[in-house]
Length: 304
Image (cartoon, rainbow, N blue to C red; front, side, top):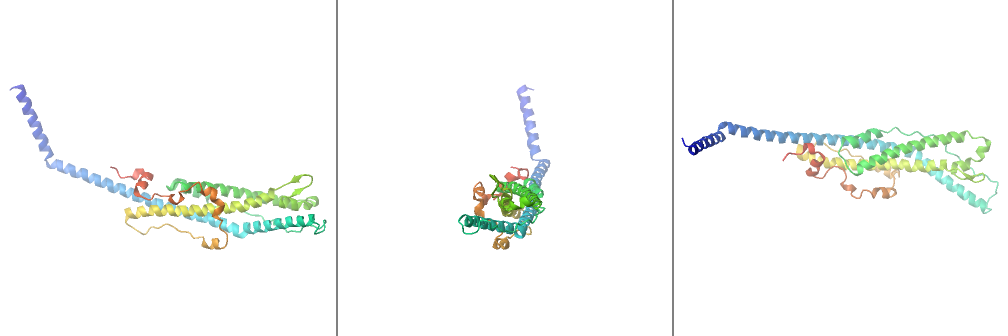
């Protein structure tokens, strides 16, 4: 047989085999199996995405409650102790300045002593789950931006407040051990005024100012963190409900209306400089759309 003819016959046989294979029941079954596998994979990815969102919701709720606990501890400390300590101290210090003004103006005897009652109440820093909160926000949820900065600010505030309370307690112990000569200088030590030839100690005065401001920092940062976490959780919840088609899950909500009415909540105007670092804070937290969620959870993204 001619070689060209042989080649043509072989090619024809091969093509007929291929077309026969493509038209066979085996090919149809294979295509069906492949399609089924793709559907199963998509269902599996969707289930993983749903489970990841559900875990995110639950972890966020847990973090909200821990932030709420820390804020409540700060509010209790302020209500029971620091607010009164600071306001009474500030008023007495103003009265001492007026006392000195009147003495310098000759409006009262030069040997008239300034009488005051020192507040030597020892304080104890509340035990707060700050390490738990740090782990929750940094490792267990996908919040980004301001919530992460708030945790760092809160951790620092709790640590500094603990140090200030310890410092104040130490100074009080020192004052209580003063001898007769030291007692005469107690007003100067207590209010941070000059004493002796060119001496001045503002240690105690500084602790009172720091006690007031750091207590407010703990309250402010923990409350704001709770608000940001609620916003984060609600955005995830929207996406979860689209996938899971259930509405029983919800994001925890906290309300500080009562302490705000009692004048215990810090004024946000005192934190303007800090807040300026997050001009788009309203958009912090969980993503607003499914595309953004896929960027945060790429391992659960649907394969194209």
